[in-house]
Amino acid sequence: MNKVSPVNLELKKFKSEQLNEAEVILHLTDKEENELSTLLYDHKEAFSSDKAPLGDIFGHEFEISLKIDRPHLPLLRRPAYPESPCASY
Image (cartoon, rainbow, N blue to C red; front, side, top):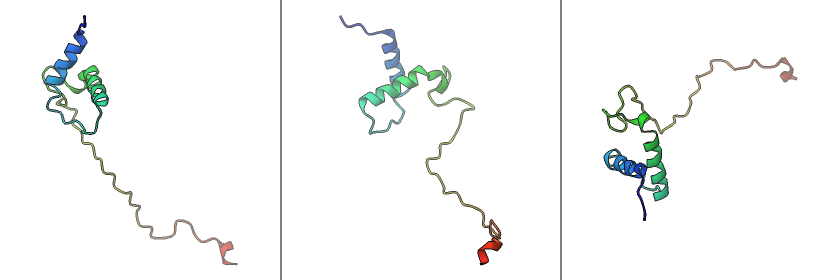
């Protein structure tokens, strides 16, 4: 006889209620997608509450920028190091 544990039932309920609207990267394997779902379920208090759905926690808004701009150094008006007097011979 194959019993379904209460944790598995809760995880299925969490997936159907909270994760059905989430966009998941398409190239995840089934194992990776299950691991991600389990991770989100295990730490759901950090991502949702009983009054707000997954990812809609007031005060936790943030933006993730995936493009890194190249650092631009300020223009130097003079050389960083003065010429060495020994360099002239």
